[in-house]
Image (cartoon, rainbow, N blue to C red; front, side, top):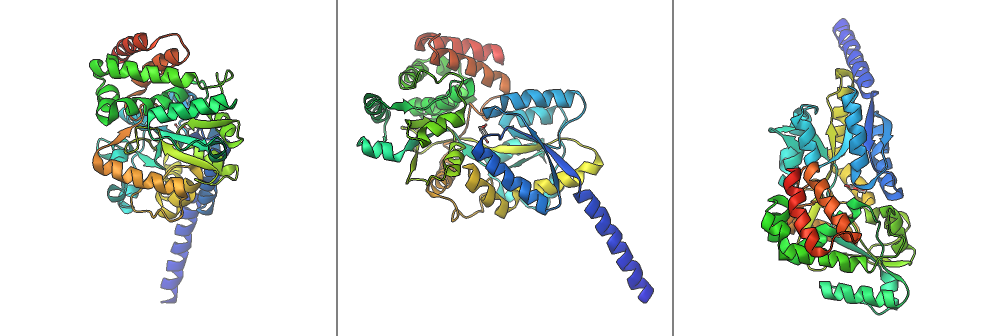
Length: 416
Ligand code: BGC
């Protein structure tokens, strides 16, 4: 009996050692979360994994929207040395899965019942060929406007509900000598504004026809011309130094009271929070006027690459940790996004987060939850980049609205 117990204990400690050594494995994570708010959210993840005994090897590649990160990733995979986990968006995940580069997370997913708790719209990208290949960390969305509440109050400006009200509000700010619209002149940021603008001009049906179905009539038609005209209107409200400015520096202009508004995804909220500002007190969050019931979403996911067996345990442990409800709350309340699972309470989220969670739910029920074109949830990268080029050319005055709509049809057709 004693020797049986002895043997069992010995076996248990060997197993614990094996588990322990597997858990001590590092995860190397490639991401583009380099702004202050993003880094704060990333720390929540690092700390969480550390508690689980998983080490962190950081591989940051600066550049909002992740284009540079995706270039670096390609080089790593080509040289046969993929990172363990990679922050990734929408169609890029499907693309890597199709190339057979991603690991399968089916066991962890089944244990955690992910099928039941992750929204369908996200699963479309987390799974490939019926297998889980990525872990959704959050849900962001792009059709937001952020405002400096004090500046609006001082100028007697109400939160705009329609496009015309928005333009009138920005005119009032401009007339006061302040900057109306804080913008960063980088293609992905202009495309982020374009998501909301196209949706506000033509509604969800038009957005789908243009960006999801890539229907030439929608891409080149009157509503698209109108969308480009609205981009030109927006351009008239940015300051002369907007070109090349990083998105978080544009957010800082709203935080510091230099500018009234920024049209940006809710990662901007992470910057406000990090600066100690309070939602709906110091800063306002409202949907791009004309898109109140719709949500253009982008979900950050960790695409898990095929790594050796040694690293697999840490990879699985990371996947499990990311999906845990407590992590989802801790991370997303800092990041500005909302949870990627439907069974998490909104109690700990601020006013903007509560709004975002309610809108995500209703948009999902009403069929007005749309993938963000700007952030890779409507089209593969080739098409997305072709759209970026035209949007940027229009925003910077190289194409007038009519020319831009014509060029959009051409660019998209060539990119397919
Ligand atoms: C990502 C966000 C990130 C933002 C700016 C988006 O594509 O989904 O997580 O904060 O880019 O870097």
